Image 1 (cartoon, rainbow, N blue to C red):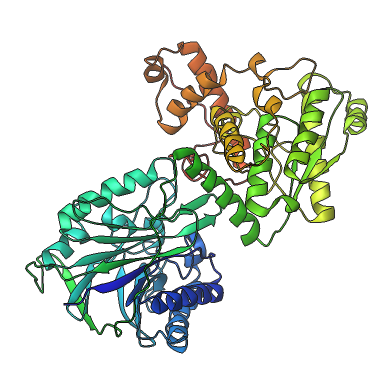
Image 2 (image 1 turned 90 degrees about the horizontal axis):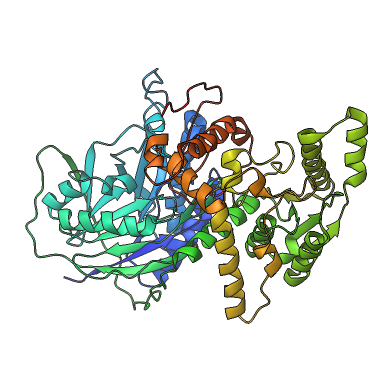
Length: 577
């Protein structure tokens, strides 16, 4: 029996841009067909983009999604690949289902549609609905209750969607009992550090459980704070798997052959829908994409930060970005991320020195702009600050913060004048302890390093400079920006260490308190003084209101501020340990 050639089509959809997504899917499917594919698989909700969040509460959006499926089926036929079997994720909703207090979405489904011959010929609904971390799928969707098997000229393909392969004794186990030859799994799996390895561990367990390969197809691209890294691959029993491409649209191919195994038409506890489909005629087969080189951890993080920034800017209709450049490490790193994301000629840096700004900081900012070839200007704020100080008789912390607020006003005014999208430059450590000025350095539309702890900021800066040297380019970040002691420069001789512990210590405590939800006693077991832990915890708790007003930024850790961690702003409980 001739194997089927399956294309894993890794695309970057835009949430809600249904017509553009139809065009994008059609183009990828046509290219896959021309390369000899007989089946093309796209990611979870690739037609609508993911996550659609409360858009699905609008019945009209669900109707548009269903109509887009029909348009896509016809577009594929018109493109000459109607005989290609296309499996694509979309939002479905029963138009007759009532909206009730227990089912406000009226039976919305996270669905995989099977398109062939200009029609939607089958639909599979996601069974396991994740409701942790960044996911709220039990709020949005009704779970599926069927297994779907496509019989394509004797090769049996089962369907699954993302979370369905993360749990044992689920659809993959049922499909295994049916004797499928492969499982096609549609995914919208966001990136975080360690996630690619975790996926492979989970998929290996499901392959062993189901006894068949799994073709894992993920979305790619940024959507608000989520970044999808692609990393599509085929999980095979007991062998090395070729790594999938990350952070780029790509199509990879795999051969699926009929396995010598017992085939069942039913399995206890499951409703099974089986659909017979013809395979398109065999064609001369394209060799397919060369397996991607596995990116190391820092390269993956950089890819996520650049992808998230690029797609946020472009998907909201922006082109140019502006940011304050102080000569410090945080703004230096954000400037390079921005240039890698949207191009150096679209980055506008602004130096905004006050009377406390050191000459070397001003020089470092100008030096970096020259190294990178970005636009740069100085807009001193000393006279603005003096006006506020005199008018309001400010001193101490109030005088310090007015400097940051004058900088924020300057950036937002230039944004209004020139149309730049402003990038905030604060890191996760500062955001955690409230070491940022609300309505000052916290202004902006996007914050590329809001989920990057300070110690990682330095590591990424050194890594990016090494990459530049390896490419034969000038390192973009001045060495002085990396090595000098961090300071907000809001008062004479100010250093971050005046009010915060060493960043390596702070970041480890924050990791334990924020990401791992450890209490004071648990953190103290790592050797830290309880009073220091309580001080850091109090800073984190008191800064919650600031984080609620901070711009979005790409998630790279297992628990980012925002979707992942939802704490009350008004809260008088503190760990009594």
